[in-house]
Image (cartoon, rainbow, N blue to C red; front, side):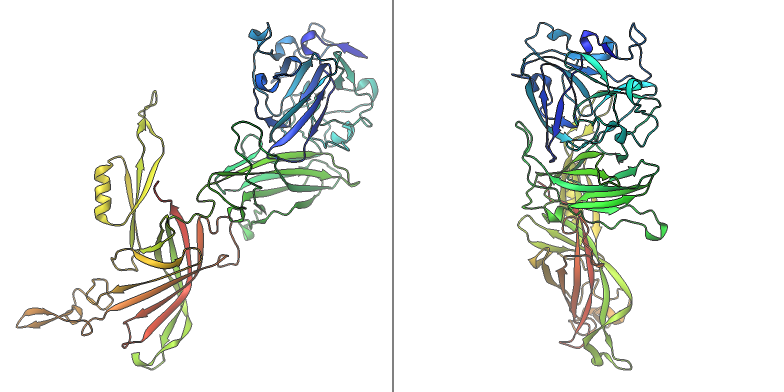
Length: 596
């Protein structure tokens, strides 16, 4: 049995092939003379039909507008296919019908009818971002969809819809799945248990109930951007949920990372390389909160029981970028497929991955770092002894580690300084007036200042700006201390605390025995160093480590956070020439990049 569609809804058979690579993926179609029905698994660039079909023998393209409710019948209620009003149209710029065009861009996850005027047909080669194919089947209605099957060795219709009762695949005249010839006739798929699906081809398929069915294995991106992973310059993880929709069959799911094709011509940035990715299986066990992220292998496999689900967190690893350069665009793809008990693949989903290497992501250390030192060992006095018996050769663990704050600033030339205080100033750009609103700032610039006088002058010069003070109270009021060495490898530096400094540990404002004064007939006379108070010198050393204290390397280690081992030598608290050593760990967090 066959029926003829009205002239505006002619549908043709077509074979579509999808490349196995992405962020940029080629989806190629061999269009035949007449009507062709295709389904896009990528978001093509360029996407404008006026550009895509330039110099191709295509005189019209139709896009079906999916109804929200059950389908509305044509004049003949026995013909369950869309009316002319259910379509948007496009005509070439040189067509006398061009004014009837109602859409202008090709979009992913959308079916199109393309009419080819050339008797020998033509090739349509698209390149775009692969997106997760999502489905919204209305109840008791036909939908025009292409399905996420492999390009070769594809499953039969019966195999693909085996995990749902909402989309029947009966044999023979009862079939409710249709393909259409280039002449415009719909043909039922009489042998759904034999005929295989074609990737990139659109089919009319009846679904009895509202459903989101996408195959025996379904993939969901939790709260992501348009069906693909655009990390931009951030490292916050994005999660993928993979479910075995079968109620009786165990399935093996495989997640692979693949390379990107070259970017298409135009304004698209070049592909700088693959995105190094980390993954972690989400675990909500209260006894094991958190996710440990490790490098994503070439093929990550997981066996899912019937109805089982696995949730995987994915995030970039900027520290592993190859030849990182600021603003370079790194691109990859995640390919997710399944295998049944006979090692057959039913579903192939592709997800584009994009990461932009900001100066921070490339490991550029310039800016302000704030962190803590955790002292875990010091010299100690010999039991029963005096200061002269202080053991300066052995560092022993402290009973309880203690910490203090540190501030370090790295300049654009790579030099590092230890700070006692910093004023982080934010200077917004000019306010842009917005209709109906008071206005809004369009970004701004941060500046690190070092003295209260500089901060006061900044506020006076920039009334709309803000200033926040950060200080390290374990250090005296001092100018920035230059550190030798290379930030990220090792740094060291020293500073001197005069005997009469108000934060010198020997000085007590209200104790006459520690005010560095003697009184003659009631008149104070300043004392020299070494009488009531002593000069103190501190030498600090920071040895950076490739991993954190637990032996792990977080994704932003060396990017936004860093750390390692700390050691310090203090002179002046013991007899002349004697010193005290302290050892421990330090961590740093980057809180501000330098101003432009």
